Amino acid sequence: MKGIRGVRSRWARVLLVVALLCAPLWAQAQALSGIRVLPTVDGEYAFQGWKHEGAVPASLVVPLELGDEVYGATLQLQPVRAGETYRVRVQFETSLALGAEGPHLDLIDWKHCTSAWLPTQTVDAVTFVLPTPTPEQQSCFPTYTRKELDAAVHAHAAKQGDPTIADGWLPELDKPDALVSVSPYVAISTVRVRVDVLRKGTWVEVTTLAFLPPMGC
Image: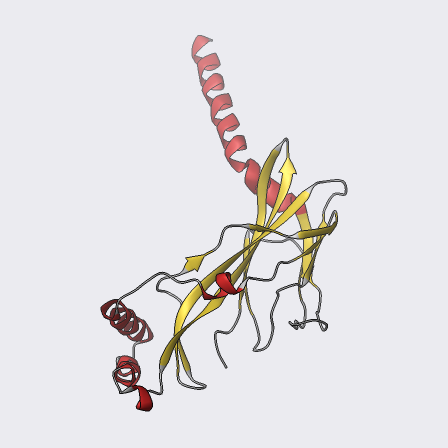
């Protein structure tokens, strides 16, 4: 009998640990039945709108169309249960690109400047207005050397399976100023929107949306 009770006790402890580990996943699975960002037509930025219907996964990647900006847009949650408390925060991440007055080479797998998680404007319990990045947040980028830039372009070319990419871009950077047709620039490459729900006094992540704006024309 002691052996049986010991086995039962061990299983009880295992089940308790599993339940604790799965608690955040349970919160995520049970929290939202949908989420959307409303179209924006007024103001400095425009957005055609976006929505996800049904159970919201832990993460979503949302590529944006040229000209679409989620800055200042309104996000609405569709909770499974009424009465819960939510918060929404936003993080901006920049990347460096090489531009040639139209064509551009986006080094999104290289260095980044990532902002802190920023609060949103709360309209009501399920409606939030996303912030607009400051000029400093839009232009922030770590320092780098030309050698590091060359290595990043070659790594990008290797990933794409086309080494001629580096040969087409890097030599342009070495031309005299009057002849240079390629220049580096910084732009926001990811806008992360994190949704948390308050459960038993603790903020639990429900989902993180990663909006990917185009870095050039």
